[in-house]
Length: 79
Image (cartoon, rainbow, N blue to C red; front, side):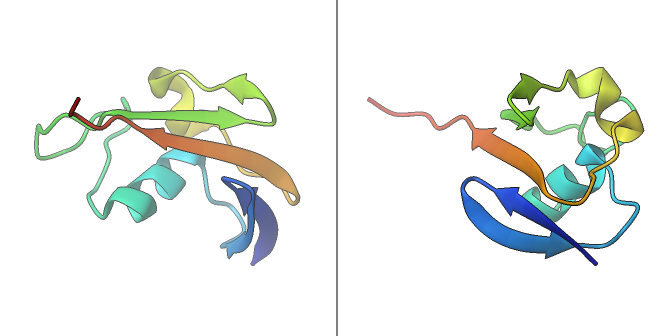
């Protein structure tokens, strides 16, 4: 396990996890190599790692390092 910060809260994730693994864990659905939900549903998710937005196409290739700061944002509908 490695320490990270997710939305300002300390957390631990397995060593070797990628942004894709984090997203899949947080939304509770598998995510493909291309950053899309395997079941075809819209994710409505954006992720910044150490103040840099990670494009969905790079989630699977972007490893989480110890002490990384992750901002995980989900879109919500309403008004």
